[in-house]
Length: 402
Ligand code: ASP
Ligand code: MG
Image 1: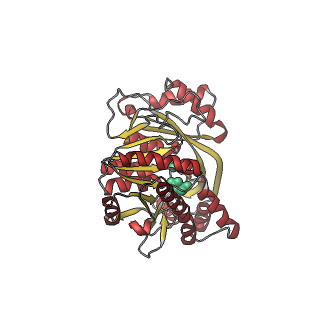
Image 2 (image 1 turned 90 degrees about the horizontal axis):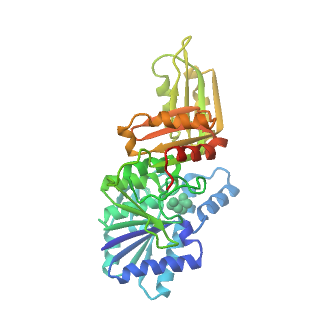
Image 3 (image 1 turned 30 degrees about the horizontal axis):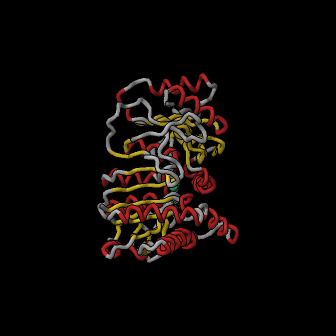
């Protein structure tokens, strides 16, 4: 069997944990499997490197930042290979260049395009455990790129797909995917199984366990994932196409605090305004999420939308530059907001789910700023201060606890 095992930063945070992970991988290897290990940087090393960069240059160039960040994963894979060596098992560490993992050129947010499998196959054939740096790639200029924060999951899934692995296991510091973040919702429960679509929404909406692109890739290539803890032997959560157990109306609740709401007030009410505005944001590489346009009045209209909070300055600048072309009167910005979402494939065939969520928020006296929905999701924008109250109330009202 070919097994891809991915370990996050906390799982390799220190010597003891690295040795534990090494042993765990060796177990599979000695059972006769081919083993590929994908690692994140140790502990909070990526944050440490970003801080170091910003300390020297508050606005570090993206190429150089990626050059720096890729050292985090390079450190952990090399140490892991040394750990396996000490335990008497042949292992080799490879970075994105050595593999090679080809990506688009967007530093900081690159997408994997193609993975050469020859080198890995060769190393596996000579019965080595292959340890690959997560999160990084190489672009057409032969520069290092990174896949966006949390991108090591995507590296693992992409390798599993490219090599037709039999298993792809994502090890983290929680036991699996929960109905809500257990740090916020005490009654949260671990799910046995979840569909790709639900997981994708939860990941995108802030559930933190998996990089959303890894779920996209897993769905596209039919890679079944297991999310489990590196600290214990619990079974974890399986992410796959369809789930047999009877559908709950709602599977999980997620919150995302990395949100800013921007309102552009008094736009001219004529064709092309939304296009110009969102085009400017797209060109500045800003992902826009919830969008709300008011009904036009007195030849003007307002458009509000949400963006990742860490892009606030870039977005405001892009909009200010276009303010005259858009004929906008005012640009407002609110940063202390957050998104709370419910996700569930069972929603599709059951009316009233959104109403139930709104009723529950009303009962908790929480005001809704914006709403957006899809077939399997309802998202509300609320004040950041209300997030914990909202999550617990919604979790309770849909009976997600044990
Ligand atoms: N080390 C990177 C990060 O902290 C990638 C990852 O952990 O998946 O975002
Ligand atoms: Mg992660």
